[in-house]
Image (cartoon, one colour):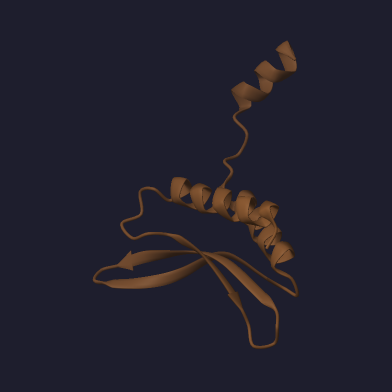
Length: 97
């Protein structure tokens, strides 16, 4: 595993914890190698429905190599996790460069 992939995994893990810091259970990043040789990556959280915890896959990726799978799940997570642009910030940026 290259240091870039290791760093990306570390940053993604921190981002998942930050985004879901209010969760009662620990959200996590799952990485596994499947029987067919593919790599599976996912961001998972656990929703509580009464006394039952339900696993929720926030985003996932399956590819032939680890680096692509991690990058794909990072990009999918960013699309889900990033808030919409603040119209006031956009206006300020346009007006003040």
